Image 1 (tube, helix red, strand yellow):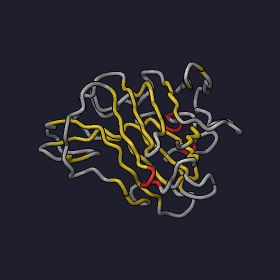
Image 2: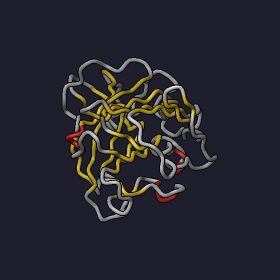
Image 3: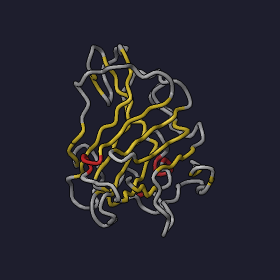
Length: 227
């Protein structure tokens, strides 16, 4: 997986062949960033349309929320609900607290020390409400939707952040579906309040393409300064 930083008109960091680098020591915090990723670097095991391939990830702060968008290689048309990008968020700036990212222990450097995990997902509706953001019955959905859910780590320091070691603090299942997703861009926002964060704070965010190949699915770490 090879990534490119795009800050304004500047193109910054390349990447290693097998594991994307974390933000370099002393890297400056930014209020927005675009991260490019090549097409064709996901593991295709879930059938046509369900192994969503991200080619661009954007992160930004807007004064009240962390805004996230992911651009896919093709228009969304899958029939399995699933996370597309997992966002591991370090709110206290201490890598020795919190949990580890899935596959994070295999990454170089290890991805650990997170208090929260955000999940930018394709969710499915079979009626007027969101029915699932993970899996779902073998029935074509009525509509598809982009949603961002948030989990808070509750396990022992160093454990992987998973559904058994976290509580979901922003949940969208069962809520009105609204306007269907059209095209290939997914977007969502995490309110600062949900993270216990405030303007002026810097978050370390380690994003991973969910269908990526193990540890190589990580994007470079981002130090996001909250406006």
